[in-house]
Length: 113
Image: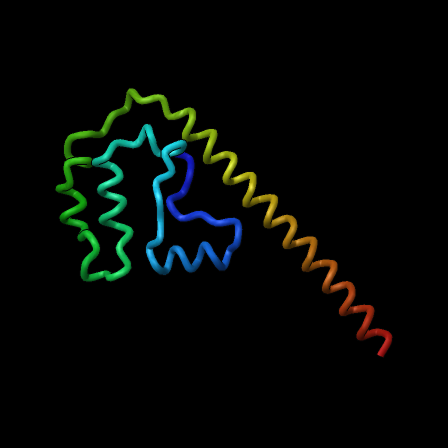
C-alpha cells in the first residue's frame, strides 16, 4: 500500500492513535489493497489481545489461504514506502542535529561555570 494505517505528523499524536487502534485506510494509498487483506489488518490491529486474531485464525483467513496474488503491480506501494522512509530519515537527521547543538550549548555552559 505504501502508507501506514497509523499516521500523524506529531509523534505523540501518532503514538496515541496506535495505543487506541485509531487508524484509517486512506483510499489514495489503500485502494489497491483488497477488502480481505484489510480485514486481516483490522483483526490484527485490536488493542485487547484477547480479542485480537490468533495465529491459527490468521493462517486460516481467506486472504492468506486463497488470495495471494503475485501478478499485481506493487510499484506505487514501493514508491509510497520510499517516501515514508525518506521522511523518517529526514526527521531523524533533524533530531540528531538538534541533539548535537544542544549538547554543544550544554558543554559550553558547563565550561563557563
